[in-house]
Length: 488
Image (cartoon, rainbow, N blue to C red; front, side, top):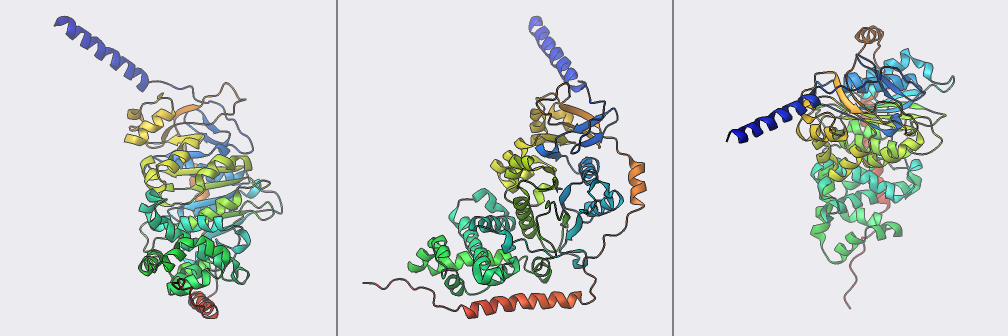
């Protein structure tokens, strides 16, 4: 018995000793500053976190109050603007980060070549005077029906979040296919004159017999809509009506004069990293807003990352704050391939489980596992365990769950030909509060995008014009929907 107790005590002592080693393990932090034309360099109390290759994507994790936006995301915005990046910024708590981006660009414009200073644009559905107008499905930039499908998928999966886990199911795919067909119809009808998301919403409000008659007048769409044609010929009218109503009920939640105004015009195009016309675009969301505009904002995001990801463009940044509040297709592909086109992606979120619910476990895994640079503030349970695993268990989950505000652990991507550098870090980020406050005192309000005193009247007129456009389109294309073949 005494021997047994001695063994237990020895085992306990060894475990405690090993735990103490892990808890108190010290990392050789980078003490020197290593910069290049692309790097993001974040100071710590005892050195630097040198993200020398931001094109390998950065994931910033942490519970609310951990400091991920203030200490890390804001640093990315400031430094990448100073180094001449074009930028797409999703500002979940508009205008917090938008004000930062606008004023930092105004105070530190030196990173851009003379004559090619970027133009600053905002998208905001809550304050139309602070919003520019942009058509995300501009027919000029839509080259295939596959792109129309991606747009439709982004819209519908934002509006019906549970569908993300059910992709492939007929009653999920068929409404997406129908919306894609409508978008492509608007692209090819009358040279794309009416190809906007508001026009698509309005067209879906019409009788489904009129909708199918118009769509199937184009052979390429008739083949695309073959499941619906089969349902019609089989007199499954209730099924057709159900599919159309599924889209109508979803889109009716976001159909508004504000959305029709912002998405029905074109003050700029979404090729934000065009070297001849670089842009800084801030898209604003609003927590607990009266209307959920995540579908519209997701559509902008999907189109932007599609148009950005090509060669011979300006170095650019995609910064998404609170990624789990928005869904868009193509993000995993952008992370995997965008680095070749000088696109630096920075994504912040609170918890990996949120990402899995929003994007599905497969896509979430692709996003997390492909990110080369990881920052984690305080995190719990599953997220802490996964972060610990990404750090080769050098920092235990219990320690990650106990991190103080502003303290981060993580790893940074180091190019294979650079040796003698620490990949894993555990440090308190040193924020220069005095400099930030000095800059804030020089901030000015984001300028109005629209100064016309007739704005409200213009918004009403635009709303009525789009409704009239679609009614006229339907009337001019009235044909009898093909009946089922006569019985022999």
